[in-house]
Amino acid sequence: MRINNNNSLDLAAKAGETLTLTYVSGDAIVTFLGFGQQDTLTPGSTRMLVVPTTGTDIPLLVRATFKDTSGGHASIRVSDAAGNAAPFTFNQFPGVVTDAVVFLIDIE
Amino acid sequence: MTRRIYVVLAMALLLSGAGPVLAQQTPDVDPASQLALKIQQRASEIAKAKQDRLANKVLTPEQTPRSTINVQVDFEPIGLALVQSVSRSALAVLEQRRADKQIGEASGSTAGSTSLATKGGTPAILAIAVENGALTQEVSGTTVTFRGTPVGIVQALRNNRYFDIPETSDAAVAVLKKFSFAASFDASRGVAEGATPTFTGDRGQFAGASVRVSAVDHKDPRAAVNDARWRTFATSLANVDVAALSAFNALREDPQIVDWVAETNRILDDVDPDQVLEVLMERFRALQRVEIRPETRAAVAKSNQQFADLLNRRAQVLSDIAGGAQVVFDWSFQRPASGLDSSNFKVVGSIGRSVILTGNGAVTFYHGTLPAGTERLRDVQVAAQLDVPFGDAETIGRYVLSWAFKVQHMPNDVVAPEGALFPGTKGTIWLGQTKITIPIKGTAAKIPLSVTLANRTELIAEKKVFARANVGVSYDLDAVLARFKP
Image (tube, rainbow over all chains, first blue to last red; front, top):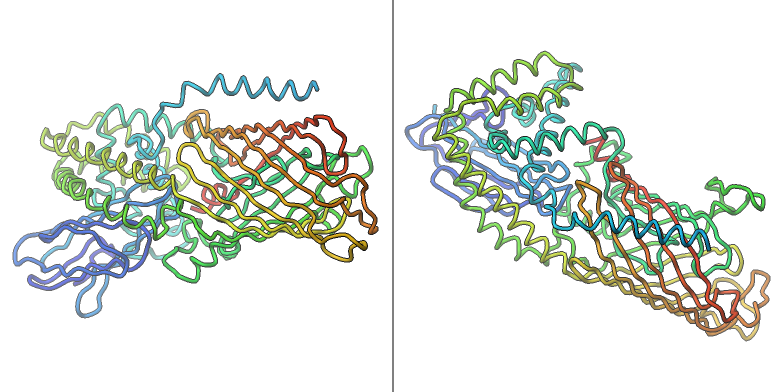
């Protein structure tokens, strides 16, 4: 896997490669949808995502929903077996309830 | 007497004007308010990235997607802004906030001598309260109280951003966050009689200090006891994410949106960091004129509906959590203007949702050498307070109307500093209080106004009704730090 354009949300991976989505730390509710899976993550938990053999810019939506009015955060990471990692952190702007981003993974 | 009448009249006027807003939506369930906050957040992130570039700093891979407007990060605010009513309302909120800028925003807690009962809340970093009046004492004074949480202050002094305050996922930090402290100074001490009280912060004005530990806080949405509620809530997010991903796919393939994003970033490239918010407001306003595809509009409408449902479901969870219990232990060292130093041990409990009931039980012990035959126990106190919040944080502000009752029993005469006794002072004091806490719109300040009735004071056991009017101001630095160090 590699990060394109110095952008954690803009990734490229080999067809059939297994990536890992990790909820590294935080106190927000983290959910994800993509690569044929949909689930909730708890801090420290991971999910394996297999890159399909065809397609371009495969989307992976990750959402952090905050429990309180301010101070919430969630650090997540998409990584590969070689140790390459694309980190992304949701830091709650005071009053914001939920924040969602979409990783796009291009197939090399 | 005249002052009391003014206080009562002011309260009546405030109440009569506040009533109609009770039914309004709060910001956390209002999509327009959420859109306004998201635009503010994105303006802050983009401006920060611009400043970093100007300082020749290289953006991190995490920072890069937040440094421009793009569908991967902004599909939800773009979707909300495509609804005319939501967009207009959000931009009106932003215009109002811009008019209020550099002042702060209201939130926080009060503490000190305008309250009969002690509340369990503490600020994340630091709060300051200045209060004038007297409750059980016979002489009015002006007390300045600083209350803070050591973990929050240490982080603030390390020049961290407000959002970098440590998280409860760190076990040691989670324990430390349970502790807070307070120091009070009587600004009327050390000044000439009749002179204006002046806070100097010197030892002569030191009136007391306290350490507080939160033993039970089920009202904290992040407390482990509430995890089951959040797990149930999380299962309801499946439809939200499905609709959001459909909207994302529609938006990124819609040529009008692609053009709007490109044009927005082109304009942002040419402006100074302090102009970013203004540009974003204009660009989000311009979304109204963008002719998107019907399938895009349909996908966005579905996603917006799910987004609104998410806000309502989360608000319901928080409403359930707000009914949780809270227990706090508090130790206070008191240095009165007259009499011996003492320690007060207090337990504070509260429960309630829209109406909050707080109860206190406390005992006070003398320090130092006591006259022969005098017990170390100074007094036993029991207090209860009912708080009824009302008003809207986004319009007139969040007011709190409170009624409190306190009983203070002194089994012996009060000990004077020289080791003598104030004769005839033992007995029971009964106090009743009505208070209104008024937020100052657009600021982090609040004004508690209270009227207290008592059957006697500590040193005057005369059988008559004592009436006191108390006024104060409290300032929560948490809100200020969030404003200036996001």
